Image (cartoon, rainbow, N blue to C red; front, side, top):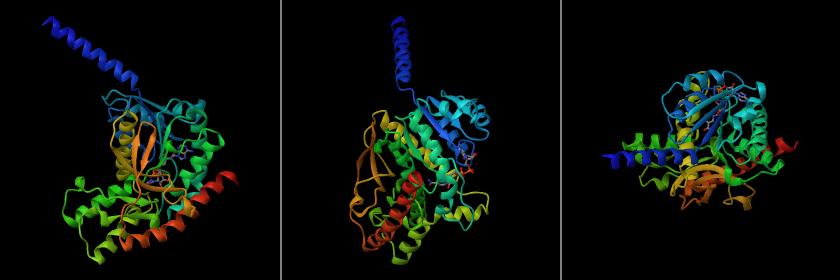
Length: 337
Ligand code: NAI
């Protein structure tokens, strides 16, 4: 009995010391928004997070106070721009997730958001480069095709650039594709894992449906591809001017953050598609590209190539590359103008 009690105490001690070693601060910038709030809730439920740090220009301390009453072990802190709030929010963060910025209204493309969101992302990336140069950044703010190059250029300016640590979150495209295919084929969406590559807007979103293992007619394939590329528009239209995808996006960002946390803690075999600095189409002047990425302790591990493409997918790729190149250059130019 005594030996058993001693063993229990030892086990508890070990559990405490290993969780102290694995302390993980995740910062959410834009935490009071449509995505920020449900994302922060999901991260509060994540056992791999030990400190959830919330920042917004409005109401982050309120959201933090609310979440802090949930009986999971993580600490929650909230910051506004006063008293160096942004600095405190990001300092010592392992991962910084950025959903700050304005969302689309009906009729807008993601590129229409550039003028407002580019500046917001630039300011937040500057704080991250100064106060959390070793953090991993997961950029949600649109247009992702341009905001990821903005973050990278800011990190380069501060001489702290590491391409293995900067991600554009494209997980929602994979989540949507898997759900839409499962609806059509009456399969369990959990078991569908459709690869989506390229970028995160309209024609730059390239679903590789030929690799799904299911057969589709040409008409089905075209309709499905269009729905995946413009799935965000369905939500924007249904919300009728009040915003874009927030709940499905929070789910997708939570899945991506969880995968990254698992990999950073040493789990192997964790793969997520993401938009990163990529060698795949660099020779064609496209520096950033989303494809399947093996995540590891450093962040980006092996970048998978696209595998075999159908004739239709080759055409999609051809249409995506010039648009992506333009979007990337726009982000780079914004920082150096
Ligand atoms: P929202 O307007 O509901 O929330 C944005 C939040 O950002 C607000 O709380 C606002 O106060 C905050 N904010 C604005 N400027 C800030 C600053 N300088 N620092 C910190 N916080 C700031 O918008 P929502 O729906 O949450 O969307 C956020 C972004 O995510 C948009 O750019 C949207 O286009 C993008 N998005 C990306 C997706 C993806 O798949 N990557 C999918 C859906 C949306």
